[in-house]
Length: 156
Image: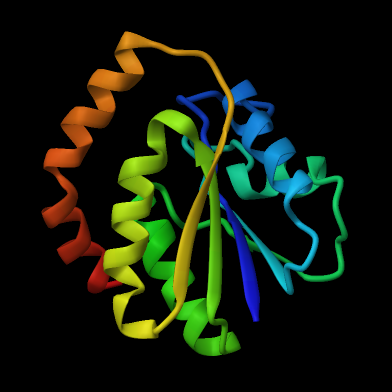
C-alpha cells in the first residue's frame, strides 16, 4: 500500500490556504497516481480557524475516494508520528511525502526516524516555491530541535 502525505503550511494565516501549502497540494496532485490513500496534514493555528488539513481537503483536485485528514498535527514531527500510526493501521509499505524544497531535508529526516520501525520506504518530493532567508534560517534552527521533537512525537 502506498500513502501520499501532503504536509500543511500556514505561517499563522487565519483563513484560506497559504500559497506554500497550495503549491504542495498542486505537486501532490501531479504524483497522486498509484496512491492508495492521500493524507492531508495540519491543525488549526488559531482559535476558530479551519485546520490546514480541512482547507487542503476542500482544495484537493485529485480522487476523493481515500482522503484522510490529520487535523491534530501542528509540527512536522507530529505529522510523521501520526503517519506512522496510519502505516501500522493500514499496512502501508511505501510513504511519499510532499513538502517544499526548503523543508525537504528535515521532513525526510523526521519521517525516516519516526517510521523506522514500520518497515516502510519513505521518499520525499519537493514542491517549488520562492527562496527566503527567513525560511532557510528557520529550517536550520528547527534541524537542531529534531532529537527533542522525535522524542516528544514518539510519546503521542
